[in-house]
Image (cartoon, rainbow, N blue to C red; front, side, top):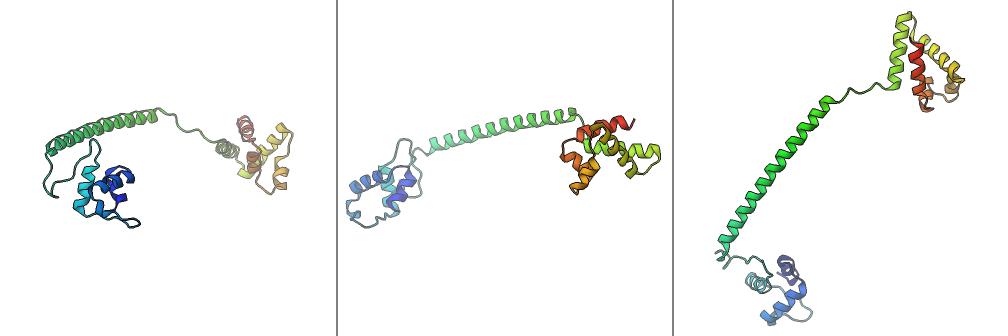
Amino acid sequence: MTTKEIAEASGVSVNTVLRTGKTLFPAKFENGKKTIFTQKEAIALMSGIRKEGFIQPLQNGEVPLQNSEALDAAFKAAIIGISAMVNRLDSRMTNIETKIEQRQALLPAPQVKPRDNVSRIVRKYAHDNGMEHGTAWGELYREFGYRTNSNPRTAANNRKMAVIDYIETEGMMGLLESIAIDWGK
């Protein structure tokens, strides 16, 4: 391992590793050359620079150190705490999902869009009066023109678009809907 890798693994600065390494292994450091440590040297170096609360590596690469029982107990306690926290969060999420489902059941049905409502009124008017849909639309547009002092058919033809699209782009769909409701009675 290099001094940079040891510093990253142990959570200290490279300068700390260099300072401790020069005291433990002075022959390893030469100017301008990369210093590479063996596994045993890296373990010894990391033990020499350990911070408070630093967990020492295994002795001889196999046998756990004397504080492993305390670490096992702490690890088990942490797992139990995390498990309890997950269970609490799961129950909270279940409660929230249940409340959302209950509120959705209470929500009113979505409203009919003004354009769809106008279309429905015209179809009903055409059916009730025994006329074709095109004729009913023409009467509605004529009534709209009388009430708004405009000529939506000519304006739509000038823009090369459908009359209802023209009325919708001009922002008068609500007005057309109210005229249709009054006209379709």
